[in-house]
Length: 129
Image (cartoon, rainbow, N blue to C red; front, side, top):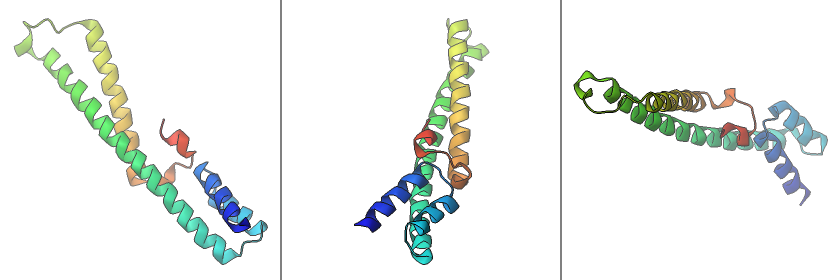
């Protein structure tokens, strides 16, 4: 029973972004052998990496949709062939520009999380923001 509680605490610490060495020290100081601690940390870190990649994929798709959709509308607005359509509203242009910027940010963060999920050691709940 104590072993399960110890692993649950270690999972929480890794999820919150604590360093692997701190979690290893925590496990070994509470009676877990070094070999068992290393195996457990490897599994828990793999779970965290998969979760970061999953959220990176979500951000990548969201960024593509926002950037592509708003960018396409901006292109239509700025196109001279559609100049007779009253789409040259400054407010609409500003909103679309902000959506393109936000989409680009999500796209970039999604790519980084997919390619290098271990570079961000913040809490998993912060990764989704």
